[in-house]
Image (cartoon, rainbow, N blue to C red; front, side, top):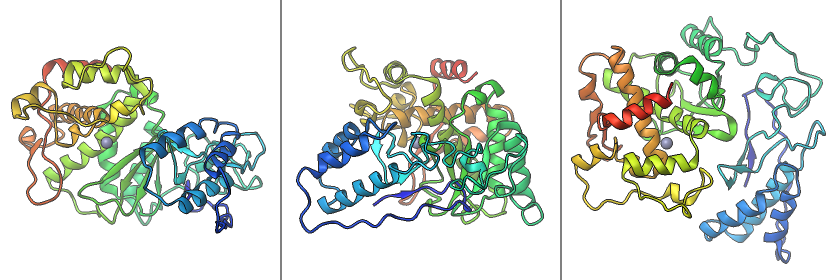
Length: 381
Ligand SMILES: [Zn+2]
């Protein structure tokens, strides 16, 4: 099924449309429903995206679930609260049909206040313009109850125009602090201005803290991170800190990739610095979502020498070219912070970790060679 995303906890969601799935599905429903969504302005790509998705995942849901899902998407995508022709909710995320619909219209009710800054994003009568430099009260963390989290929320907003929003979990001061330090010391102000695809940082419950501390959501201009359920107020040990920083830098790396490189460039540097297959000009990807960019690494011999030569800083980096890049990007940021004495003593040893037990992957963020470091350094300016 599908459900719209709550841009903040106080935001009302439109009621779920009643959907009945008939005993016998109508003829051609799987062409007609996507075609109907495709008729909505800004959703023209939907039929193609849906078809591609279906070819790749033919048996993941039953016909009845797919019918229900498409009907749900059509219902939400048909809503246009302010009547400006742009639907409130979009149906495509990362070039795939979505189950969570993010706002397509930045100001759904048309009251002049963008959704997250609007205490009632779907009510045109409620929406107060606040001074640009201030967080609206419904987003502000209570300073008396959570002083440190509130301070970092304020700093992130004032200095980087990034809004930390409590969501299914509340923000941990530890995570916000490290995010602030990464942004402050790992990046130039000019670069951060260009990374306008990170505007919000949501605290989510339910991320597995060992495997999944954060994710980047391009469609929502957001990063989601774990909150107090995973990181309370307890100070982190050095290794834990480095792990958290590497995850944050990794997610920023995804945002950076989409803003500062092209898909073709990713293929080119993948071949040049990463030992990924060299693509001929007819295979070069025209989009970041081209399938070739999601193929896993193929090794003839996997040893530490080839990891080093190919700038493979972790097992996870071999998942696909996107992850290879994000991991290397994180490695370079860690190196920068280490050099600035921000990661404690013997930080270089701590960038090399072989987790025992079933959790996690091996990482060695030192596996970056000078050529690629230099390339990253120039791009990161
Ligand atoms: Zn990633």
